[in-house]
Image (spheres, rainbow, N blue to C red):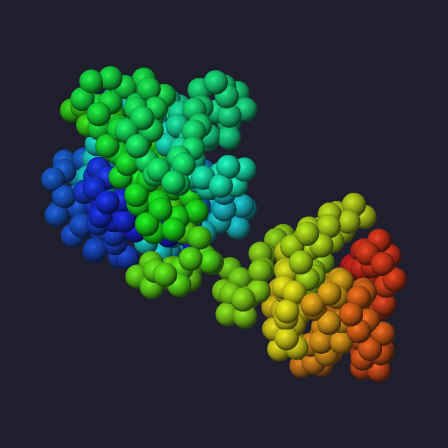
Length: 400
């Protein structure tokens, strides 16, 4: 689960991390009130969307040379003007894709005298099963570009969960950033604060870009992006309340109600598969034959008829979908249960696009019998390769 920058900073502040003073705003009037409550005279007006690259982004409704989604205001009047241009408009960044995201919230923050920008993030290193720090002197830039062009400028180290964060971890952060004296001690303290926040709230990722040294000799988290482990949210009802459903795809929201692993993509062939590995293979082979999947969907190993039906409805609700491929290898997941769910959902929604079904495994013959006897226009496939070729061919025929 992702949250907004202002929510992320509130969490970090609760753990003692240094952040600038700021307030969220939903309207132009609230933005003005927020600015008047800050010291000033410089303010930062920040679009709040679940995507990076806001400062370099462009608003669809504004001229191409207009400023991006993060702007420096030197007066209350400028705060109001910027808020008016941002709220309700669509911001397109490198991470939103061409569709962009509508800005419904702003964060009005006190200005900061920046001396130097750094990069700091934390994530779960699955190779070591530890929390890892990723630190760089190249703050404010895309870390992927830094990793590609100057990998020597990135330092990475992990923390043993048996000991937790220790003083030498903080010193490693300060050393990687080239800090000395008092500001190095601030970095050491910050490392412990961030680690504690990460572990205690079950974060999956924390990114501070940039972490800045001010001209007053202070370290500050100038931006913050947090993602939580969804599997651990049951332990944090307070964090669940921070979820902004307007930032999520409606199909993904519906899928979460049924505990379905669903991610919307930009293709035209809907996929319903059991097992993440098989789902990835299904998407790959669709690409191999020249088409693009419209989604990733893993119904899981123990899905019920109702769960399968819900998954099918979610796929068909996507107007981009021109064909559907159901690929089930039944182990715990019985083929007859899948067939019953698909038939029930197809009848309810009124199937209007080609459907190819490949079943294999437990109760496969019964599953095929249910599909065949449904009276639906369904194409059966013998294996995954056959299924992929058939659905790609069928969607191309429909398009023609």
